[in-house]
Image 1 (cartoon, rainbow, N blue to C red):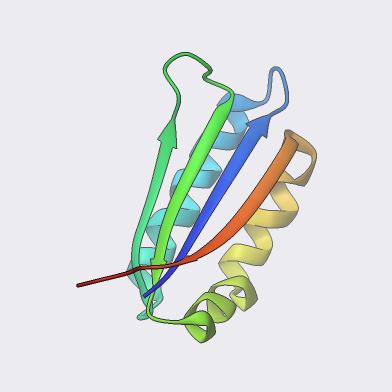
Image 2 (cartoon, rainbow, N blue to C red):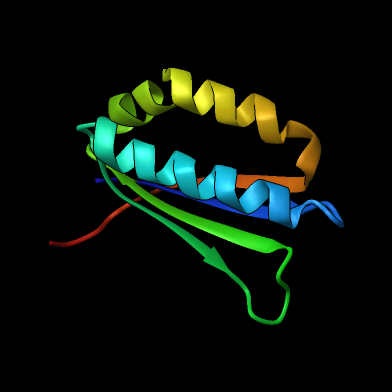
Length: 96
């Protein structure tokens, strides 16, 4: 499995705009992308502007298909100015 984690810090005053778009992107990814196995959107109770994504794909190709999808490109363009910082990490799941 190919695991992607993303840490976002959302710009002040933009969280209410960002969250519905993020949640829709996750839902559409799970529903329409056969290689997307899991897409969790999480928020820190102590720092509401800190959003964490945990995404599971079959492989790197499935993740690339996600990045190339029309819905992701539209999401990415829509939220670009809402994001103060973003860090993407790639992981491999070990074991079963």
